[in-house]
Length: 267
View 1 (spheres, rainbow, N blue to C red):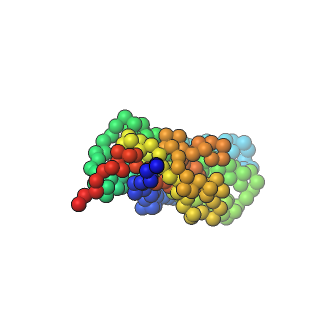
View 2 (view 1 turned 90 degrees about the vertical axis):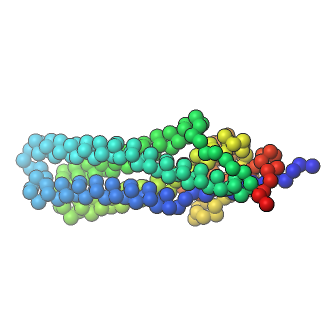
View 3 (view 1 turned 90 degrees about the horizontal axis):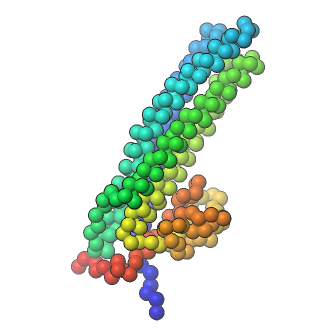
């Protein structure tokens, strides 16, 4: 007769880390938006956006926009490295602390060392964040430049352009919020599964969050199913892990192998 499966207390993503990440991104996006808006308003008020003087004005405008783009791209390139490392450290620290206390609850003391596998997972999280942080600035700047050039070429006033830029700012902020929440979920799942695999935990039980308004039917169906941490579960035509898909808030309960199930609880 098969032994009943025992699970380790799961590590759920830390909402505080997601909120911190969002605040940091918001601060930088706001600074970029204010800088661009100030320059654009100054140009309008000085009459620098008048396009009836010939093609040279359009060329000058394009050149100045490129200069601003280069400045903010460089800023976000530098920011990406720093902020990504801070985020990864917070997620790993939280995941390791929760894993340590979960093992203590079953009478075991574990050492959280930076092994090669953990280093690889950690660097993977950092690399993904760097790309996403840089993309926030890249997409925003591309859209701002397009809006400015379209507004000037069509003779629109500052009020109209400011309204368009505020709308774009809102879109960028919402994307940053999604990145903060989504990446917190994904990074937590990535780092905790890497740590658990090192400890001999190879399987988990999928848990659906029941939190979203439009849950993926495949994820709802996966609730309570056993899967291999090394490859995930085959859903919607691909292998995936809880928390890895966009807007996925699923998590999992780690299944203790036999040798860990036999560990004695403290008296």
